[in-house]
Image 1 (cartoon, rainbow, N blue to C red):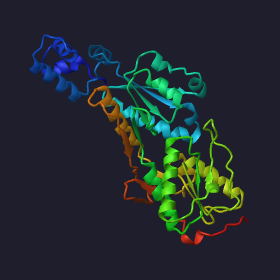
Image 2: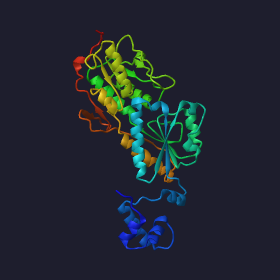
Image 3: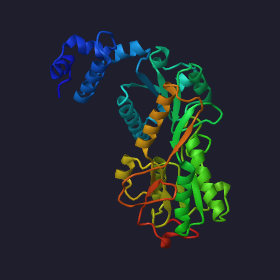
Image 4: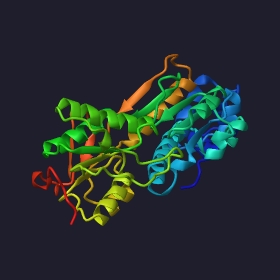
Length: 357
């Protein structure tokens, strides 16, 4: 479809192009009644405003920067944040904002180098996706560019954030495994790495406590190092009958390791994930996982940022989003998130002691 021009609007209304131009650029020379009529017709036809001229008049750039740590953009992890970025960009387009993406690598964070899009002073606001180094976050905050955090939060900083209801979701996932008869349930995730992993761990612990299942320190399995990259999983000698993994990718890594050791999943050992990555669904179609509503997170995040840009409030908000989805095999919890459930898992697969071979 061809771009709508001022000439098109003028011809539709039977007026001069000059009048249309004055109305759409905010100049004098047309009545308010005519200006409003021209704007309505422009919107109806799908006219795209000149954001440069609009921004100059309003003192805005109409640019929002999205910054993602580079260590979260490899392989399947990339799919999660790429989808989140796409949803954010789509939402911002509805408000005439352009989106500028930059990856913050480890060197940038260690040397406190600001992203180029920040240094160029072209941003009205920033969206930070995925947890950055704390000192680097503070440096970004010192730019005084309005920002929000997505998929993480920091209660010590006065910054808006949007994240998944990780505690409730992982509580329900652990409760599901307990309902199958499991009592030897391990958690896979380095809890100091991100707030999401910590919150999911807290949900797991809360479920164990609620159902009077003793917590075992050897059932907390680290999955990444100080560089936040995955490391070799070290499993306990007393093998759990179920593993609650902090995301789908590590769940697949664990399943591969267990199968090499001679275990069958889920017949011998149950494994659950989190995030419902499309890539993982194709390669591990039976994985029980939590579906994160990325589109809703994006919508809530953009709304928070625009409120901040428009100075409609002074308080800081942490908004928690429940999951959703339309998976073929699922059930909804009281808290609103949804799980994709592997129906092959059954009570008969639970054993007090599991031996390989």
